[in-house]
Image 1 (tube, rainbow, N blue to C red):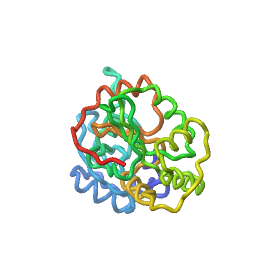
Image 2 (cartoon, rainbow, N blue to C red; image 1 turned 90 degrees about the vertical axis):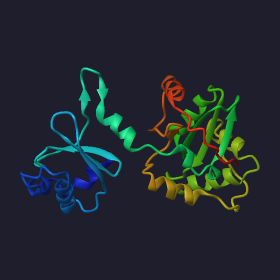
Image 3 (cartoon, rainbow, N blue to C red; image 1 turned 90 degrees about the horizontal axis):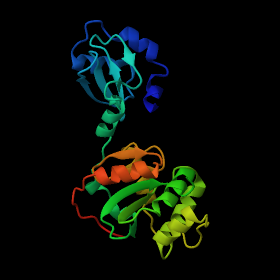
Length: 245
C-alpha cells in the first residue's frame, strides 16, 4: 500500500497524538495533518460497518475509529457477500473521467467496428504491457487509446519517442510490444511524453499498464482476458466525442 510511506516515521506519534474525544471528522482530519502534513487527505466519512471512519489519502483508503485512537491499514472484507469493500471503494475514489482524457496525446488503435473503448497508460519496456497487448489482439470491436507513459527507464523514453515519431505509430507500437521489434528512426518530432507523464502523476497512475474503462474505472496491472472481457461488457459509455491521431 503506497499510503504506508506517509506513516513510516509518524505512525507511533499518530496513535498518541489523536485525542480520545476526536469524534468530529474535521477534528480527525486536523489531527492527522499535524503528524502527516505531507499526506493529501481528500475526504473522511463514517462507514456503515464496525464504527469505522474511512479516510481517503492520496488515492488510498484507510480507516480510523470514532475516537481517533487507532489507524487501520488494510482491506475490509464483507464475508457474507464475499466482497472486498476497500477495493470497491478504491475503484470509486480513483475513477477518471474517460471523456476528459487528452486523446490527442494517445495512439489510436481500432479493431473491428471499434465500438468498445479503453485507454491504457503503457511503457514500451513493460513486460506486463507486452503480455496484455498480445492478449488484446484477440479482442474484436474495440478502440484502444495508448498513452505512451515511459516511466521505467531512460531507454523507455527513447523508444517512446521513436514510436510516436514513426510514420505509423500504431503499427510501430504493436510491432514493439508483440514482435519484440526495437523502434528506431526519427526521434526529433514534438512528443506528448512529458505531458502524459505529468498527467499520469497528477492522476496517481503509478505503474504500467493502467487500464481505464469508459465508465471511468481504472485497473492497475494486466488483466486476465476473461476478466477484461467481463469488465468491458459492463462498462457504460459516456457517449463522448474524442479526438483522433
